[in-house]
Image 1 (tube, rainbow, N blue to C red):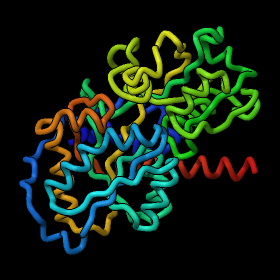
Image 2 (tube, rainbow, N blue to C red):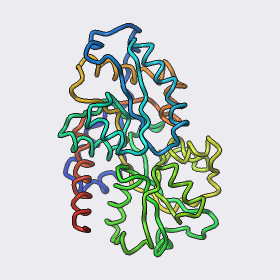
Image 3 (cartoon, one colour):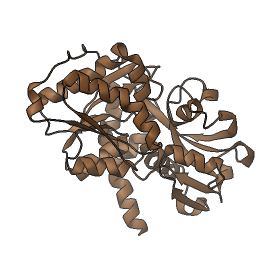
Image 4 (cartoon, rainbow, N blue to C red):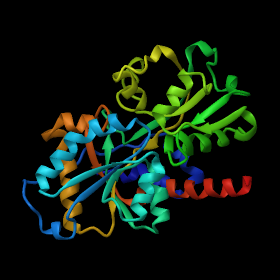
Length: 327
């Protein structure tokens, strides 16, 4: 289970979030459960199919390829059709939850918080990934091209910056919050900012000189020359789209809570238990499937509750207020 003592400092509100997160978020260990035995469930009459949303930020064929064995395993286990719904962007998954068009999706913390606000609490988190070092956090990092000569945040003044997606935690919400906390007026500091359409697209835009820098996500642990142990950089290195020698990492955020696996709150409790148990057993029983969907994997999963994302919900409220102020 999540170490609540570590998280207690986060509950004071978003104003304390960056400082509180500087100590990191850790799990007391991974939670485990036996893999549910294959067979039709009583809940199948209420959940005749399982529709799973896939966030944007990676090209669609790669997303579907990574999740196909996962889809088939869920279908074989619970004996109901399982369909994957790749969204063009984060908002697509959020809107699908609002319209009850999907049952589940892995989301970033900001996307979950936004969906929770949009649906008035009609979604709930089940588990979060645990990294190889026992943390349940990752980082945002700002990267530039190696040949740009930009090696520090100070040198980014007057240059262009790409955000990943307006609903991305590491690609938008947290870097904006932390940069403002450092006294940077984002609208004046950078020559321009814009949305790349996802994390992978942001790095590609930098490599193609469409932007001078972008914000993306990484586990922040492991071999930096390989893109760390997990995250967008690691995935792009693994796919041959990137070598880390092409980039400078010029800024890193404090730790950010890992995003949860989210389901609609109205689903039967028995479904939510089966779905949680399936994921808790997945790293041990089917390690390749687990590594595929987690883009490198880690130690497994830990159970989580909504209360542990309240600081991110508050940050979403503050960001919305900031947008209203600017307009």
